Amino acid sequence: MLFVQRKFKIYAGFSPILTFCSIGIVLTIALLFNMLQIITYLLFISGLVSFGYYIYKHFKHKQTEVLLEFPLRLFIAIFGISFLLYGSAYFSAWDEFSFWAVALKELVVTDKMYGLNFTDFPEYPRITTLIQYYFNKTISGNLHEGISISAHVVFSLAFLPMICYRRKRKYLNLILTCIVLFVAYQVFCTPIFYTYADNTIAMLLGVSLAIYFLLDDKNQALLLAAIPLAALTLTKPIGILFSSIGLGIIGVNYLFTNTIRGQFLQKIKPLILTGLIVFGCFGSWKVFISMKNTQPISKTTSQITLENITNPPAHYFPIRDSFINAFFLGEQEIGSAILKPSTIQKDIKKYTGINLSFLEDASNIKISALVMILFLASIVFFHRKRVFAYFPKKYSFTILAITMLLAIVGYAILLLFIYAFVFYEITQKEAGELASYYRYMGSLLLAFFFFFSILVYSSKRKYTYYIFTILLLFMLVLPRSFFSNLVNSKPIESVENRLHMGEQFNTFIQNEKVEKIAFMTYDNIEDITLYHLKYELLPVQTNSEPLTFKALTTSYTIPEIKEKLATYDMIVIKEMHSEEIQQFFMKHSIVKPIFILK
Image (cartoon, rainbow, N blue to C red; front, top):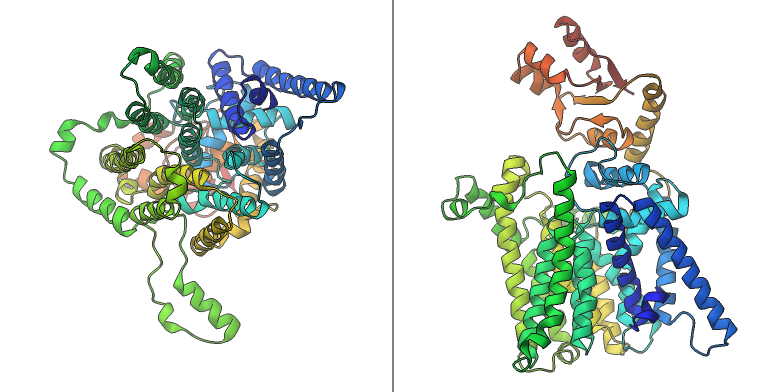
């Protein structure tokens, strides 16, 4: 970070996030050329050598300048707090076991992609898992869940020192703002300690916009903003869409607010170079997976066709109605869990004896995307003088507001089409329920919240009142689980079950030649045990799609069942209903080793 700051003469507060993005991009390139481990250690050693050089230079020549400026000291504090909070945490979220944690384990164990029998979502980029890989390799040398989660949190908060740019230092405002931006992840999107990429997508887009509009030299701002925008393309497949939104907002503002009539080609070069950097990163990844991957790519936006849009199938209309209700009325909340009046009623009755029965049947407070948009607008209105100071050119803020609004509307429409035409082909149930809607819609809104929060930060007392009010509002909508998960040093029950499950298999797998297993539930297709096994047993391959005893015995003939199970070395079942399943196998001469989970 010192090297980035001093070599390229940038503000120290920009250095942490730009360094993280640069490390992630370099590690991605190393992954492409199968040099991941050696580049990781070279980066680590070069960092140590650089830091030693700066320390030596500082004390040898008795320089008067501070070795670590305040933004870097703030980052060190964030780093330490993150590891104190999450250094002993464990993976627990569903999608961590369906992809993110498994992809990380594959990288740490083999130092490459496709190194183990893990082929789910083969086109997904790996920049977030590569950052976690870097921390695992350089701190513990092997996979450690607490280090992985801490690394993800540090990366997610590496932008916080940016708020100090050209501001006077006031510790109360700084601390309150850091808390609000920390909490905002859960209010808008997902808890910060989940290793999903959705939070990272929001952060990188917000950071790129903030860098561009904070700096006066727009040519330099374009090139610096290109780094997080390029990293954004390497988060997950939809990252390129968010990068395009960022490029669009920045590009439109650059073209409309700069005098480029004279020497047009010369002045537009920085914008073209920015686009080449961003799309070059994205294109390199696409070439890599097309060369390396022999598995079918999972469904993408190719199902969104003009024919489907102009003549939508019958299932489109109920999904459209649900989406409109979610966007405007909050039928699907933007936020992980909302304050329940019935819970308040129980607490009041418990501690005071007063029974406010009308709260028991009251509707939950719901936060829709529209409410969040109005919330963002109110922030801009409250700080209008400060915000407008970054847009001295006539109509420049109007252009920004229009492009941001178009981005929200366009993204919402695309998200609707993804649910109706892409997700529906994968799972009709999740499409109809708008599964993970708050995550997907919240990512863009969180990006804009981060952007405006960086712009409006101030050391004035008026700001103190503002940020304290925002913190109170966020506390109202946070789930109670947020506070219990804040310091997750002891494994919760589901984590203990997962760890115990891994212990049961360790000895058995070492003694038996098992390469591929099928986990079979009785009738529950949403049993997370399948994904726990996928993570714990790697490199043993686990069935990708849920397999249920009820579905097998009602939908397939005995020969078809035998054929379906033929590729597996072992069947894993739970203790409950195990007798019925075993009797069925014996009755129909289905000869397969069966492992019963205790």
